[in-house]
Image (cartoon, rainbow, N blue to C red; front, side, top):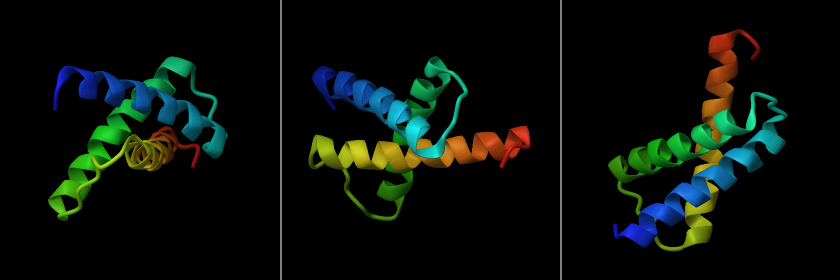
Length: 84
């Protein structure tokens, strides 16, 4: 992955965190949502690659994967905090 790809991944992860906040109704702070989006994108991409799926075709696919990953992490965050 080149430098532009890494920067776009961070931007898409941040956007995904914000979108996931709106989907999940989470109010845990903008910075936390952005970080969850970035971590969720990396985590879900890693899991999908272990299962043999290649998700780096387009930025739209990356965004969808990042949103799903961020939603999963927000759900886990709530479960750990006792709000799920």
